[in-house]
Image (cartoon, rainbow, N blue to C red; front, side):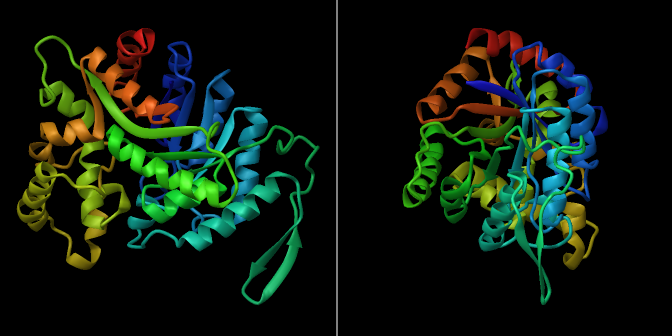
Length: 354
């Protein structure tokens, strides 16, 4: 099992990563959400310059936000700064789209986008269309110290819905999804395998990762102790935001979580101040960074358990072992508040004993 960190992209993330690569973490994912966080490539560039081994990945880029040659040259620039340790994660979009009141991009658009970016990153010429015009393009000056195409840049697909999962198996060099229990993860991976089989591909060596956060419980703590809620609350409440958005991230709702959602829908949402046609602006305020006033009372044991790796060290290890048995190769833990404490905690109680 590999251990990674995940960040709402911010320029000073490198400070944690310098510590993380000395504590058993091998990769960092940077969220690309233009209405919420800093520019993802600026943050990755700063991390690339200050780290030595840790892999750096977009988590994830969205086709509608940058044209294919811009994404290709941006990630190839990071690959110049961090040769051979750069990954391009791509998906249809969650907050990168929802914060603008837009739905995820269609899967057909994602497929075409990945195909063009991949060819550009191979140094190939592609046909680029703008309206009625179609022109041949390629990345120039490939050997002049501006970009690095010599070290391959794998493209990992973020997917949760059935059709997206199949597409990840069909075209992805890797697959990223949200944390789930072992049976649910198996179901999702089966869809990835189905897509891979259709394309004549094997998933045996495919990098697989789940995104989550977590907290190693101390003596006397429970899943709803104040320190735990402060640590994991900003991440786990995103599940409720996803339910409001009817996102694939929120699929497979259990009875306890259905009741929690009903409470949040009936009690909390009516207190929001924005009109219904602009509510997406308020819904995603604080997204993955902090909880809005009053949201903490919806952070219960069921939500913490489903959306995070929270428990005693041995409990977290057992959960990861079950997922590893189903094919998981990496867990990405988002830093929420006091990154150094979280990094050292997981390194000592989970990674060192795994």
